Image (cartoon, rainbow, N blue to C red; front, side, top):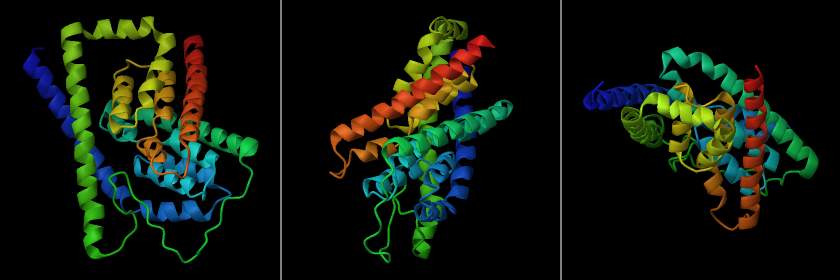
Length: 292
């Protein structure tokens, strides 16, 4: 395969991802507002709800949860549950590989279980206090999505933007990241060879969960793209993939740094907690893989 063919393949793969991602984000643009409202109202089940909605490939939910946590409407356990379950671009990218679709169920199931366990354990240990009640029950809460748009419906113009424009913009952004990643990996494979890369990862397999988690902590959609691309090409183990994706909370983590509601030290502590949980389960799964 020559260099031109390698680049064309990367472009075609990116186009397939764009089509799938665009369709998915249009669908979820109709339900994200309702999910957010139920998320606030059913507080006893918030870690469970958080783990459930975190699986939806929409990084806006991690931002909404971070916003609710800063306002003390949800617990730390709920926040961690959403961050861990957050799938971001992983699911749309896997869906763009028809022969790899079977990987979605074990990936989602594993992240879901880890998110629920972590969320409820954290709340049981350190956050039993009641969630702060609304000062004004009639107050309208406006939540922003990952593209900084309001996820509640208002007028017809905003509906058009919400259900068409923002999904399109977000899909184009994701596709840009995918294109860059595809081109980089395509060129690396072309010049170094696929076997060389796989041999490097196999020789350092015990460090892959650590590497994946460090990459996952980077608050950018491109990180989940990188981890997932390595996973679907069989270059990254399932355990390392779980570690990386559990650590990847989209833009939710960086949102906690904004404002003065939460101290810098506390945000760092939350980041470390997320990293520690990802490492724990990532290495546990990797050990099971190596044994069987």
